[in-house]
Length: 263
Image 1 (cartoon, rainbow, N blue to C red):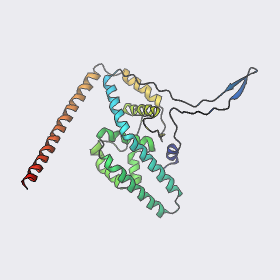
Image 2 (cartoon, rainbow, N blue to C red):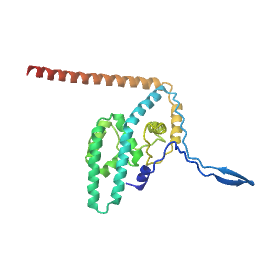
Image 3 (cartoon, one colour):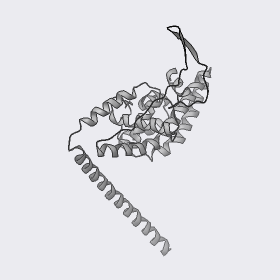
Image 4 (cartoon, helix red, strand yellow):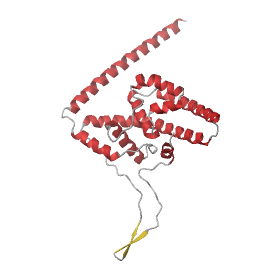
């Protein structure tokens, strides 16, 4: 794993930076007069997104709920991989490196696999993007490097389970959904409702915001009506499917009760 990845995880920046320390002023002489100046910490001022599209607002809120759910997994994975990178660098013998790697692989597998299977399709898709944000590597690259049972789970099941591309990259400058994810993260960090961790990749949030403004400005007039109707259709199908599954479970449980009462 590259040093840039390790550096990104071990030297996080806070948004915004809070400090109670008072810096010593520096004095500058301009036209014979002395002026004092104190360098202030950089603070990113985020203005809430103003949605013209009702559907996009709903979409944003849904993504927000899912980001808050999967962020801890991406953050924890980055921390584990950072520790693996650091420890491997300190080990001299190849045999010791292999042993330690297997220990970490088993730990990650036990810690993640059961929980990952509970994720929905979109939650899995968001996690893939966040893993790239936090490690600087696509999930495909991470899995090739780990080569563990966890890797096997993803390679075998990810495509069908989450309908995702393991080589997907996080691109908040050009991808609208990725920009929503980034905006959500920055706002949650600011509110301290999510624990911040610096990204391992570079991008410009404000380029993404400009792209989003252009995207919103160019949405067709019937965009909301079409998208909301499609969302209603999908939700209806989902509820019908869940109702059938629940009915199937109810009947199965009822049969078990009848058999138990006859014994």
